[in-house]
Amino acid sequence: KREIAEMFYIKKFNISIN
Image (cartoon, rainbow, N blue to C red; front, side, top):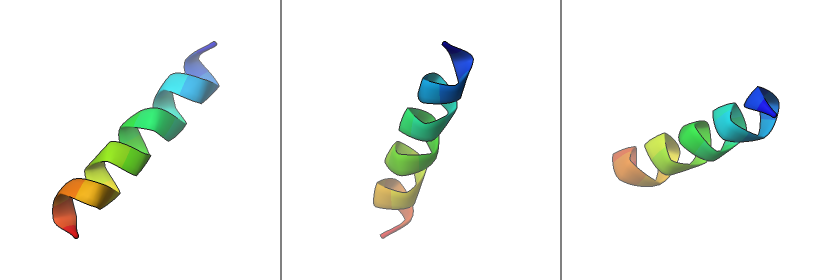
């Protein structure tokens, strides 16, 4: 589902910023 993909992208983005 797209919800999971969005969460995955957000997590990756957060890790990238950190």
